[in-house]
Amino acid sequence: MNLHALRIFTQIAKLGSVTHAAESLLVSQPAVTIQLRKLEQEMGMKLVTSKGRSIQLTEAGELLATHSKRLFALEAEIETKMNDFLTGKRGSLRICSTQLPASTVVPHWIVKFKQKYPLVDVQLYKGNTDWTFQQLLDYSVHVAFVYSEQQGESVESHTLLDDELIFIVPEDHRLAGIEVSLEELLKEPFILREKGSATRRNVMKLCEAVNLKEPESVLQIEGMRESIEAVKAGYGVALVSALAVKNDLHNGSLARVFVKDVFIKHPIRLCTRSNEEHLTTTANFISLIKDELVKT
Image (cartoon, rainbow, N blue to C red; front, side):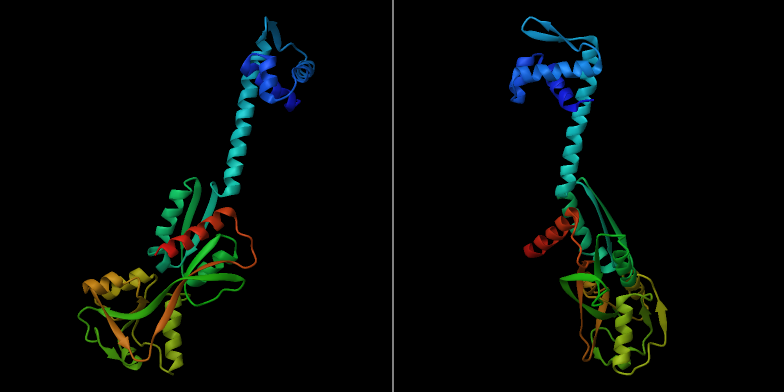
């Protein structure tokens, strides 16, 4: 079917006049008439009849007009949706994050993004550092947030916030609020994160750096928030994000232990795959985060 002729016929049916259809389409009346006749020949039936200075649709013309209006309305909807996809108003955004960013800053950024782009499907996944990098490299997600100095292969990163890893103990612990050596601290029962966690690696690096053995009494817990809750419940020492326990330290439900000559700066970083052109939705999300950080 000649869609150009069908489009002209649809405009004739809408306006009830060949003359008015020609004016609206910015073409001559004879050109409109020619296209109408070609369509009637192609269909093998009469679509319009004259009615004074206007036209009247035949029964076949009425049927065709009903369907052609739906066809071109669908075309307009497709164009709108594809344009929305091109500009990032539609589409999908898959994000993975280590636990600390996922439980602190990332939800805020996602909410801001959804408020601006409500038609974009956003999904957030959580895991430890190794898993998060692997999800990014496997193309399972578009962007990743990590709480780590570790640099994955083929990954570009941008530091968003600087945080510090600190040692915490229960509020009534004998070491609460005082400064001790790392050797003395390691004699205490310790909570360690699961293998693949950046905070666990930092504990091991500290031990290796000063030739100390790993903590003897260890409770392994998956998840930073879960580790913090275990310390609150009264068990030993944990290395955690200062950002994650800011309120707990303020209200006195936890206490910090200061370790001599130990300061562990730990950034929250946004990671993408190297040398890859971002989808519009991803680019819009990254741009929004940068704008939010400027405001703060």
